[in-house]
Image (cartoon, rainbow, N blue to C red):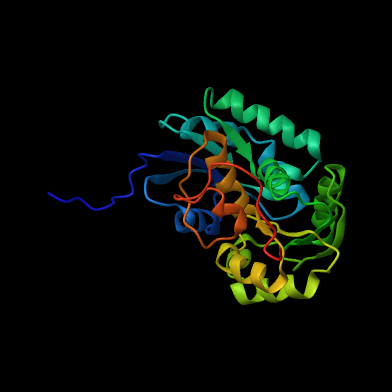
Length: 261
């Protein structure tokens, strides 16, 4: 008798607390997940992709409820999938919400997207970075501040001035690719593409080949960090040098080598 893969999370069940109006992160995590890795999601409402809207979501009782509902499942790791939401008021803000996740989901290794990004940048031994976003200037400024206070000077940055979550999800990969290529500077050691409702993972390998340096995206880093937290190799290859660290047949640990080397 022969069975085929049915999506069961026999290697890892990853929990994702995600924005109710968003659609990209789940699809991209599914795309990167190898056999035996499953994704399970809970939702929280985001009024608008603005400082005020994000702040309202993060301070709502609904966020805690979403985490607790998700943690009722037998999860191996959990991520709050919001980039600007987790860096909105700086490093202390992110660490506070990371602590909340651990309180609301006891015993489940957890990360925020912002925390995952910092871990990913450390794994590739990044220094100065290029920041590419779909955000408005005020949110970009907060992203720059967050990266720089954690040891990653931002040498170049760009945004798309988008405040509607559905519009974010409609941005084609070609536009993301072109914006990264236009924004990056040679002195940058890595590119970080922010936002968990912006399509990115399908373009990462092509960008790394063109730029000769690591490219990190918010979704990619979140997925990688969930696997990293529990020491599981459960990613598919082809989604960038970071994720290849957790590929099913890859090494269990170590820094990503520079594609240009």
